Length: 269
Image (cartoon, rainbow, N blue to C red; front, side, top):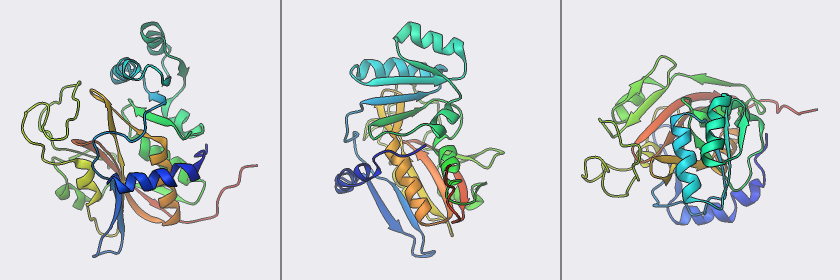
C-alpha cells in the first residue's frame, strides 16, 4: 500500500480546506498534546470521481444505489467476500465488484488522490487501516479507549473490545437522513452541534486526537477521502504516542485507541 501523490494531496488543497474551516489543530494546554480534526463545512470541496464501497450488505447496497445515481460519471468498485452479495450488486446496479475481504483490500491496495472510501462493514475501517500501515514504521498496539472519555461524549456505548460509540441521537435515525446543517431530520429541532467538531476539541490526558470526518455524500450514505487517512497516518508517524482515533459524522462516531512507538521502518525487498 502507498498513499499516492501525497504532496499534491496535502499541499495547496489542504491549505484551501483549512481556510474554509475544514480542519484545524488545537493544543491541549494541560498535557501539551494536540487534537486534530475535521471542522464544519456543508459539502466536500472536491466533486467525487472514484468510490470504493467496502461491503455489499444492506448499507453497501444502499450506498451503491444512491451514489451511482447521484454521481453517474464517477467510477465505482464494490468489495465484499460473499459472491451472492456481489452478484446482486452487479445485477441491480451494473457496478464493478471485487471478491475480497474489505479490510484486507483497503490495507493492501494503493490509495489514489481522487478516491473516496465508503465503509459499509461492521468494523472501524479507518482505525484498522492505520494499525496496519503504522506497523511499517514502528511497533503499534491497539488499546481500550480510556474510561475518562465516556464522560466527555454524548450517549457513550462501550463494547468488550474497548471501542466506544458516541451519538447525539437517542433514537434510530432514518436511513435516508440528508444530514442538514441546522435541524435534525428526525426531531426537526435544532442540532446539538456537529460531533466531529466536539471530538476535535476533546482533551483526554496524555492522548492525541485524530478525527476523520465522514461526509454526507447521499441521503444516509457517508464516506471520507483516502487523503484524510493518509494525513492522519503522516501525523501519527511524525509524533508517536497514544492516540484516540475517531470516525465521525455530525451525529455519530466510533472511537478506538492505539499506542505507536517510533521504530525502524520496514523496508520491502
